[in-house]
Image (tube, rainbow over all chains, first blue to last red; front, top):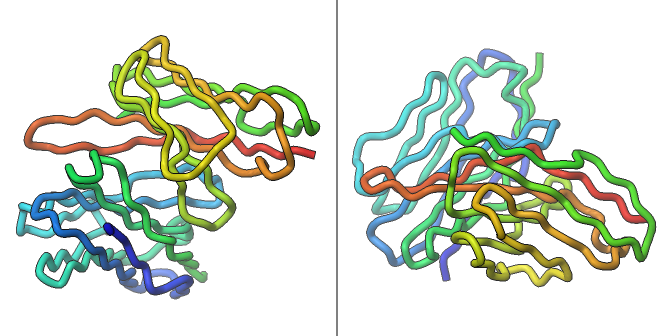
Length: 115
Length: 115
């Protein structure tokens, strides 16, 4: 079965600090796509960053970057210089051809940025 | 990015009423999805469509039904609402691009409360 595990139900850091959210997944496929989505209190699901498994270079989007370790099946999200607006639920997800390109979701990590 | 619209954003309704949640996207994406999400919890796929006149049930059993008569429109209907249907409903759409994979983009969601 294909699964996603986010082991940190909740985290909190001070504004301007760096925080890393962990995500591990399980699949027997060699090619797949990984995603981090953010869901702020408004509850809209917003794409933060995506990574193709066949690309070795870690994806970055401004203050957001990932540490993709394919052999370990790990896909952590690093947020640098955290801001109050980063407070949200963060969901890790992936999709494969085997899942018919449907997203497999983690349970989410609640991130609180404190002023 | 996809422009996805959902109406209504909030709905409070009595038990037994028939309701339709609207979802429209303007990017011509073939694939559309409906997810159900309880507050702070992971998403559960309830319906999806890979194109006009194509609809499938997702992993989570749902008493709702969907239709896909036009590419841009994917409404979800509950024939007889019950308190157990109280939840947030998220609509998404995606398009596969060779070499770039596939990314789902989400609407703002509909929060449903059934009394």
